[in-house]
Image (spheres, rainbow, N blue to C red):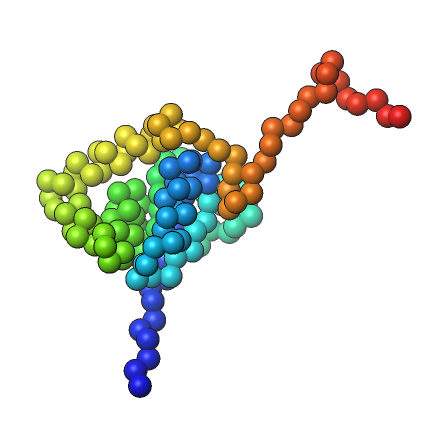
Length: 151
């Protein structure tokens, strides 16, 4: 009897307010991936709800917010298109796409396209106040704009 090989563990930091990011995370959760993935919305890092770990602890907030980040157990970070390619390489049906994306000419184009989509992600795909399946509704201001009177 042979044991199952232990899966690589990766942590994926994504924008929990980006509709494209949320849809991608949802899709990844349903796909066969040759890794154990943990998803962390960057908003939980910003708020302090989740503490940074090696590979993420030295990333400035502006860089953290600008793109996807994937870290492995050793603290190696794959950011932006490199994070996407890392994830694609672990999906059996998409690993060929990852190999093409790493080719010298394609890698530069992939990096440019990723930066454009990441920069304009809210305009292109919209923004939500939902993260981890929990949505917040905007607070209603009472008519007249003041506090409610107590009965």
